[in-house]
Figure 1 (cartoon, rainbow, N blue to C red):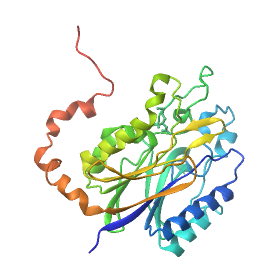
Figure 2: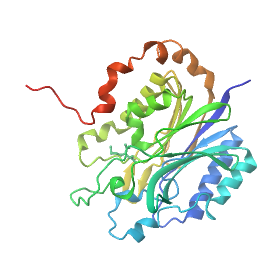
Figure 3: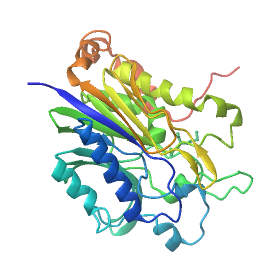
Figure 4: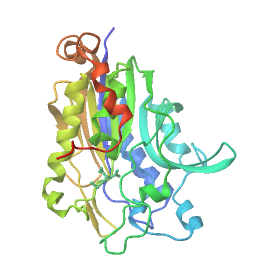
Length: 311
Ligand code: CDT
């Protein structure tokens, strides 16, 4: 049986704060139709794809923050995207801010779902939340993910769908090798990632020129070291005055980029992803069962911060 998936990276240009959910969903549907006409089976949308990237603002009023969150999925506003996925026979991943009542309290997560033909078949909640929790007025803009979201509580699940083993990560997760490796240890074959990455990093402006390089570096390494396809999809361009990187791409298990967006706007990049291409890496250089030495890696789970030896 063919294990080829035609995967589309559905990059989004900026979303203005004033842009309504129905307008954004119309853009997502337009991209889904384009992807389908190009032969796609699966389409990957960015992180927090339904609104502007709101953690750039400090908001003291929780009711205002909550206007950026979804209480149900699908909702009346997102239902047309689910219907289109069913009509076109497509799978998609979508990032959004999730507000849920769990364990007797209101909880908020930065979430991605995997939907196949209109039905939710998988969910992931972002584990690595970058930025800070308190208002830091010295910054040109805020990055308040640590204030607005809880750390995800679903670990790093994989799902059998479309004949493969599929996983999701969200933005900053892509910089952490542990995230890919936990997926790799479950045999992942396609990792789908959405991101919102400002060009300017206020605490480390000397990194700004390297943003595109680091974006590809981490995803190419994650793909190769785990013998998996990786699809990274941006929301990019100048959003509410803040520049964000693009260069959405599809990375083969060899670590090579095989498709890439070239604009900072709504754009599809597509690749023919043969899920069996990962096998030669998984059975040789990265045959985990043969070569990994988990006893030697204890520090990875026992220690959080780096502790250099005494001088
Ligand atoms: N959304 C998100 O996670 N963005 C972060 C910016 C962190 S500043 C380097 C990212 O890792 O791209």
